Image (tube, rainbow, N blue to C red):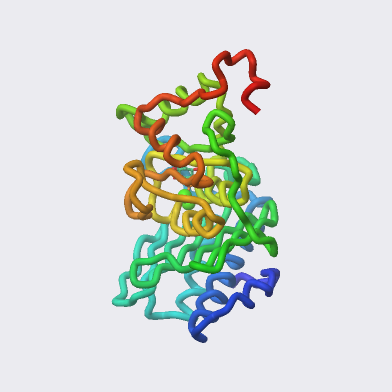
Length: 296
Ligand code: IPD
Ligand code: CA
Ligand code: CA
């Protein structure tokens, strides 16, 4: 049994909760996130077992399983009749309007290599709409939280997205699936096109953190070609609540149940959408790339 040390900023609970049950949902979300994160912290300095899932280097560790168990214990203790979708153990199907979507460790390859870019990610849907999301990287002590309609925060600080207006001036982030996707405008082609034009595109190895860093204004945009619901469920709400925009590759409002994601500050969204679909970068002021000072 994991000892849960309360360190969640209690100001999060002061966000108005029209019903008592919403307060309980938030409390449970934050306790579950904390319980999973305690396992990440516990295992990071231990020798843990690592096994392979489908694909090369698609890892799962003892810590993923332990974090998932701790998270699900907290949720089922408080809400035994809720639906749960969790990466490693699958689904607990229930006839409920509430659905918890869990990635016990997002960034497992980082975790397995001791790279402190990994997190617990939990989103909560009510009647098919994401209403709460929490992403916690305990190795950097960063807890991201969002409640639908009430904004997003990092620890105790309110978040807002950046204000860049052009992709050429942006700092982007992406990720690559474990198995290579050989499609037109695939991950490598889009990455190459941006990098050839000199756009910095980072690859952190955790989609949930990528999304939170867009929400925090550290990145102006994120795109990825193949995510699962647990990778994006909490993070997409956090971006939206920080004032950003999240869609699929057609520009439709994002659903975590399809693989494509573009999440931006809103201002570069249409341009990045075009580029991901095969369009070229608008260079505007950058006629001659050697005269970089004209861009900024
Ligand atoms: C992965 C990470 C990575 C993304 C992959 C995901 P995992 O999740 O989010 O950044 O590029 O598509 O599968 O395996 O570390 O939970
Ligand atoms: Ca993941
Ligand atoms: Ca995972």
